[in-house]
Amino acid sequence: SRSLDIAVIPGDGIGQEVVAQGLKVLTAVLPPDVKLETTPYDLGAQRWHRTGETLPDAELEALKGHDAILLGAIGDPGVPSGVLERGLLLKLRFAFDHFINLRPSKLFPNTSTPLAGTPEIDFVVVREGTEGPYTGNGGSLRTGTPAEVATEVSVNTAYGVERVVRDAFERAAARPRKKLTLVHKNNVLVYAGHLWKNVFDRVAQEYPQVTTDYLHVDAATIFFVTQPERFDVIVTDNLFGDILTDLAAAVTGGIGLAASGNINPTGAFPSMFEPVHGSAPDIAGTGKADPTATILSVALLLRHLGFDAEAARIEEAVSADLAGRDGTFRTTDEIGDALAVRVAS
Ligand code: NAD
Ligand code: IPM
Ligand code: MN
Image 1 (cartoon, rainbow, N blue to C red):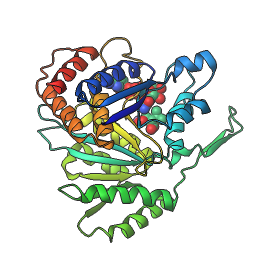
Image 2 (cartoon, helix red, strand yellow):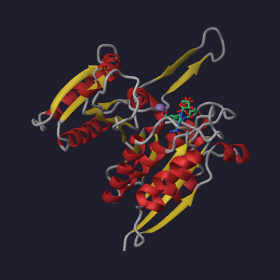
Image 3 (cartoon, protein in one colour):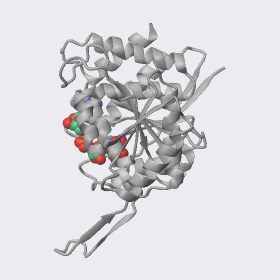
């Protein structure tokens, strides 16, 4: 019989609220023959305040033993910026070599968008997850003085770029439109840009069925708003992908709907699924957080582990729920309950 062993990191702020709904829907969607085990990990701001720890080795080790990780969000106004982001979230992405940060964007029917008309939006951003300016390769000289100099070096390796570019070509080849857009800034970031473009053009020769395109990241933000239908699969650097996927969320119904997966396709380590959004301290505790992004992340988790039918049921439930939204306010819990009912029936 099938089983599912999930590590859960609710984290901070609305992270805890939305993860509770994700687990509710996960429990409801699984057929009775699937044995579900969930293990909560107490990591985040409260733990840091109590013990000074972000991600102790023992917990990092223990996390390796699960099939996948579901994370809410981390980050808290009472913790210096970067402590939890780097010491917990990025540490997990790096330690488990989550080199694919998969961020699908789809405009569901009857979902409000700030864009004009009714654009067709259905693309996926394949964001590099382990390199770029995220590696912590920087420093500061004469800190705090008028002569301070800060550097934050973007690291791009042929190995790291090629593996994410290959993954993106595979994903593009498997989709009906078979189009892949590289987004970078090779008119200014000439060294990294050159590496990305060269690897992209070389790998492209193995995928003649895939139509390719290149955009500078600034121009890409224009087309996200004016012509989002031109995108199918996008492959890009870690930081560009971070920024573009918040924009993508904003034009496809809002940040409360945007799901993501931090994937290690080799299976050497568990992959980690989380909403694109953060801990939203401005609405934590109010019941205003939309748990849909987390619930769609549960669908990505299920598909990653081969539970395709259950993943599809969640996505259909979300689609139906969104189609029925009429602007009436529902709490985090109410949305979770409604989706749990839909996936169970
Ligand atoms: P944020 O995503 O937390 O919030 C941005 C805006 O979106 C806020 O107005 C918030 O209320 C709104 N929002 C976010 N999620 C929502 C939801 N589910 N439903 C409705 N509205 C929602 O970004 P921020 O304010 O820049 O960051 C807050 C903290 O979260 C920071 O500490 C940051 O480092 C952290 N962060 C963590 C993650 C993560 O854990 N993966 C991601 C992004 C930011
Ligand atoms: C995200 C977040 C993280 C990132 C931060 C919190 C480290 O913004 O998951 O999009 O920049 O990757
Ligand atoms: Mn982000």
